[in-house]
Image 1 (cartoon, rainbow, N blue to C red):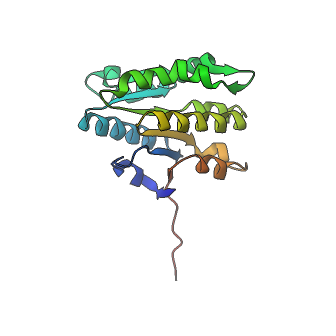
Image 2: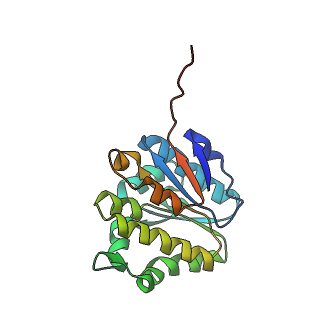
Length: 184
């Protein structure tokens, strides 16, 4: 696992595949900056980007591009989750049908993905389901070679356990800037 602090994740070139990175963020604007760079890096590589996010996040990201939401393939995180969740857990075959098929369809021309469905699950207290979904993404990456970025608000982990479990499901971890103690 590779660790980054602050804005270093923005410069990751995603040459190692399959990269499954996670960014823990405190500042929404910084996350949108990183997502913009992620989409732009995909464009430089002739890859399409699938953004599975809330409408607000997709809208904020689309404002960064002249071609708006046509700059990426946008899927609603909550409605996509509803397509494959069964009894509070992600169903592998339904995940493959609803998410895997989209990635597979785009993979021939080059694809990368960003997802925040796991953060939605985690935020609702469904931590085990979030970890199961992370593993389904990992399995999809075994079948299809593509980079994947996830993001969680750092506030979800304040006073709660679990950050290590989330990190364990990723190849790269980005943390918000950590203040350095000044020495005398």
